[in-house]
Length: 340
Image (cartoon, rainbow, N blue to C red; front, side, top):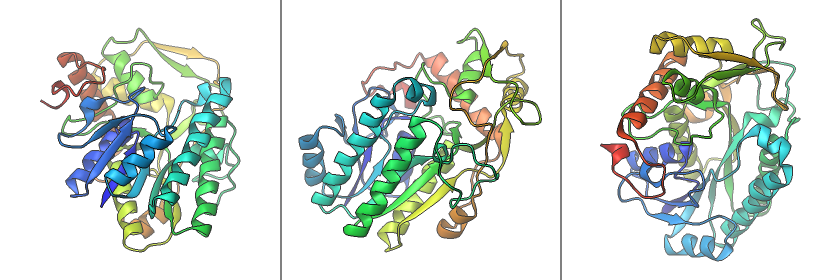
């Protein structure tokens, strides 16, 4: 049996495909390559170029590849964009995901791992945040993720489908062996953009909001290394395949870092000062998000393999240096340059 990974050529998706391969689990990727990059995928993994809104293509893929499990990443993910273009996010993240879930039920897919987000919590009053904290999103992105969690809950109650909804906190870093990392030059992720600024690929790095109710006035986030997050997906899938029940779990380290602390880490590891610009708050950004990860450790017996912020920044910086040195194309073609 095979795992279908939607959005598997993207940042987190490609790391998870590599983790599946390392675990000996066959995978097939469905990705329209609008933000993904085929060169990030390991050799031999089938890539089907398309979108989950294409019902016939999804149905054909599920049947042809004997898919019994789905890991669903394909989505729009930029919080400020969701505030400006909410209907686009509801169409892509909700309507298309519902089509995918419907296809899974029709084809007898029994296990579904969903890429959710800490954005479902909105602005929690108690930190660290537990899974039973009220989910009150403050932006359309978070709302779309919560709506699919609800859809999966209700679908699982009516059909033979078990699911895991993994609520990511801030994902960063890159594969320590240099095989994969973030490729998009339009990324808004703090650690990636800070590393690009350190290497001169951006003229500056902006701090959006310096008047938050935090010790240094900047937002605090819980960062998790992307390779650790990929391992969590494999463990969640195995739990479902072994007959475990559906669950929701936070994915983080349980330790928060402010924007200024992250930028200081980049400067320390790179050995060079950043050109920092202070800017107004962005709409929809909560002051603090840090995970309570007790449930994740209890259900999956998971412990991170990577360390804290220095390991995350170090691998991210090494990846950006590698990409800049090799001139890796962001085109859809499966270049070998990303894996030499």
